Image (cartoon, rainbow, N blue to C red):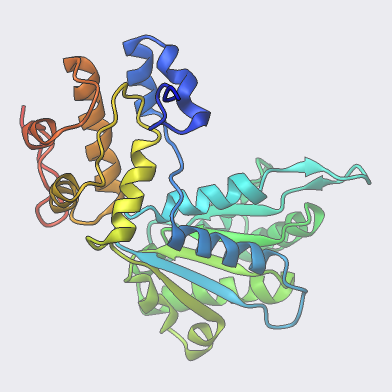
Length: 298
């Protein structure tokens, strides 16, 4: 039986192989979801939270992990799956999921403005905090919001202890008033935000998105990554020698891994090799990170 062309590529992306080299390079630059076990578990947890029946004390969640480990991408994937707005049968606007970003420092009014921006509704940042808060409550009820996500949650550590307590109390008030879950996403430092008050710590469960280890799960991840790289020949990145090399350079960081493989795939297309081999990985000008900083040789 003749082997199907490009069987190493996911069927959804095999049509990309009919494009020009430049178009394939552009494809590599586009954001793309790569699923894995831990991410699927968190997505299932988020969907479960979204459909919890309303009660006086709703469960909340804090997702933490290293920088560039895919936390924001995971939150965006949840939005793509469950959060797109629509108009219901009663001709009412529905926004099931609202994703906001925490302000750069603990500031209650700035948090309200960040949330209001997601509604594209007019508001005045000079209004009192109380008015902004109740504008949010009105919009959430009017749009049938089921869950609020706050990215960069660790930013709330910046600022005085009083400011931190104020913004955390504001989050607690929104949760109580609206009876919806709130999901925070940030670095491990975000856990310290919860300890501004024992009540906050008791309201949030914490899930960690761990750094990858060099094991079979990492090799499966490499298989999944390879299935979306538009290269004519299989690279077999999951084989022990290449997997070990890629792991050493990426240091088990998902963002580093994605960037490294995309850069290597671009080199493979431009060189005509059409596969990522040891020579391309070792000759790549994208060097391994040092204390979280990536160095690039020019």
